[in-house]
Length: 226
Image (cartoon, rainbow, N blue to C red; front, side, top):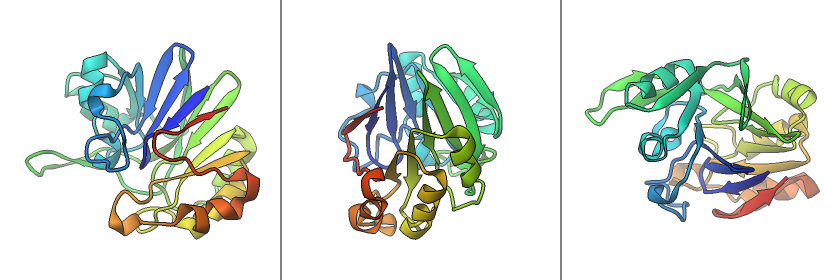
C-alpha cells in the first residue's frame, strides 16, 4: 500500500487499482503541490465537515464518480449535492471491495459553512482506521488527546499513525507525543500543521525527532510504502 501526503491532513492511498483519498483539501492548501483537477479518486473518506477537510470533495467526486464515505450527518449533507455517499458512524466498520473502514471518536467539532454563510451541522467528528492487505492506517482527524487512543493502539495495532500537531485547534506536539506513545505504531507522521500561521510548528524539532526511529516527517508530495 502506497500513501502520499499532500500537506495539511490530505492523504492519497493507493491500494492496488483503487485510489482512496482522505480529507482532500486541495484548493486553498498552500502546502499542496497539485490541483484539484489532478485528483483521480475512486473513494473519498472524510473525518469531519470543516472546510479544510471537506475541501474539494464534491468537485472531485462529481468528476470521478467517487464514493464518499463519511460520518452520517456529513454524508447525508453531501448527498444533497448530487454525489454518491455511504454514511457510517463512530464505532462502526464496513468491509468494502477496496478496503475496510472503521470510524473512531475524535474530540473536535464538525460543521460546514455554505457560500451564503449558512452554517450546517455535520454530526460528530471522527478519526479513521483504514485497513487493506493486512495493513492498517490510523488517521486521527482533528482531535484533542484522549485516553482511548491506548485502545486504538492495543486493538487496531496500526502500522502507521497520522496525528495532528498544529495546536490551537487540535493536539499540539506535547499531547501528540503522548498519543504516539499510547498508539505505539511503528511509524508516526505529523499532520495538520504549518498550513496557517496559527498552527505553525517545527515538526522535526518538536515532534518527529523525539519519537526516534518511529517518527517520520513527510513533505508534501512525498510517499510512504507500508
